[in-house]
Image (tube, rainbow, N blue to C red; front, side, top):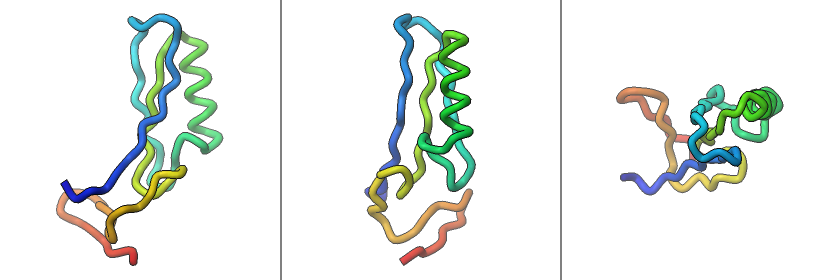
Length: 79
């Protein structure tokens, strides 16, 4: 645990038993981007619940560490 945080944004249906779709936007994407919002709305209209994974430092999530994870064993300093 490095203290970094991510955020999960949900759109729930009235039916708690409805299937859940996990949306992983592109590297700089988040739940506020148009294509993600459109996907969430379409999923909702088909009775799916959606959860969008917002990466560190995006869409109002504070960046609490000085590096980002670029994949298995690859990190980059950003400050």
